[in-house]
View 1 (cartoon, rainbow, N blue to C red):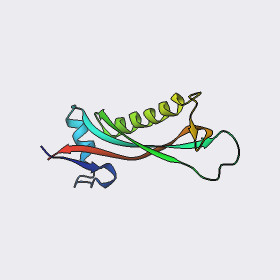
View 2: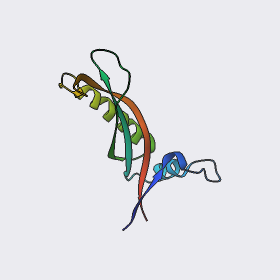
View 3: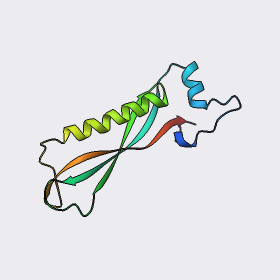
View 4: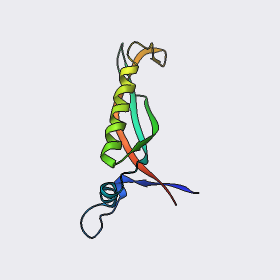
Amino acid sequence: MNTQFKYISDVMENQDGQDENTKMSNTDEASRWYAAHILLYSEFLDGIQDYYNVWENIYLISARSVDEAYSKADEIGQLEEKADKDSGHTCDDRPARWLFAGVRRLAECIDV
C-alpha cells in the first residue's frame, strides 16, 4: 500500500462542474482521512514584539467531507490556543503565549 496526499486546493472540477471530493462525499458516506496543517505563533507578553516564532503542527483528521475536515482543523487550532492559557510558555526566555494563526493547508490522504 502506498499512501499519497491529494491537496484540496489542487482538485480539478469534472465536466458537470462539481469537484470530485464533493461528488464523492454525496455518494459515499464513509469517512476519509485528511492531513491538516495548523499554524500557531508566539506572542510575547512583555516588551516589544520585533519577530514571531511560527509553529506548524500536522494533524490527521477523519471526516466525511472537506468542509467537515476544515471545521475540525479550525476547532483543533482554537483549542490549541486555549490550552496554552496560563501554561507558563516562554519563547527565547520571555513569557509568551501561542496564538492560532489558521489552517495553512488541508490534504486528503489517499491509497494508491
